[in-house]
Length: 281
Image 1 (tube, helix red, strand yellow):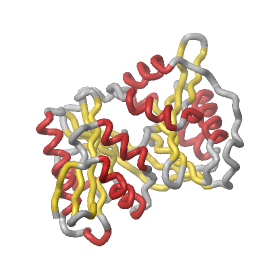
Image 2 (cartoon, one colour):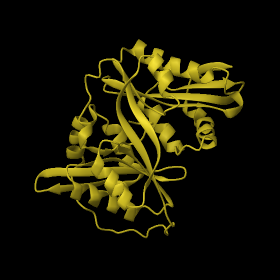
Image 3 (tube, helix red, strand yellow):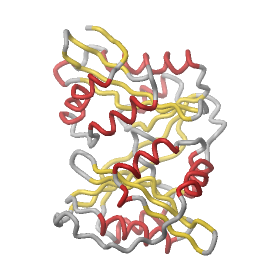
């Protein structure tokens, strides 16, 4: 087997692996990784078959995300996943990225701790399953048409680094999920979303108060026609948890945001209701 840099020709192979694993990413998501870094995504191949993947996504060289560590079930327990993970860390260290971040499952957390990662905060995946609606059966009312630069500037302060390319991609691919609410000249909250392989995913979801948080989620749910909707919410945000419960969501699993390095740009996570997702931060 051979470990090498991933290219866009490998997207079908990556998509096959995340489909087998039951993950929600699409070819659009794989393109987001590859558009965000020229040589920071990797595959393990057996002959011409992609049997493992790992991705990195840098943000302003302040920190970088590690995700999409996937191995074909037939090739597990051979060390491929560890090799792919170690390759992402070497690559980011060689680039001089000071802080590495990821969202760990309970199973993966001990491995990351051995590699020097420490916990930052907890995230809970909430899932709603409901009757599907016809495409286009949405409420056309928009909470607010806020200029995108204002949203991007606030998001940079909250996330800790510029991720405008990622948010612009979310808006381009799902413009009906790009929402914002303002009171006077102050931006009170925003939300984006994406259409995944089997579910619509709401995030990031940011709000300064309960009223704004509730309005944004309600509008997102009106605009989504899928049976399954996913939200990766901040466990510390009790308001978000209460609103999700009221909308028939239930907790499916927990994640731990972890980092290795100084974490000099933590952002303002207390203003977040939910992250984009564990693959993007």
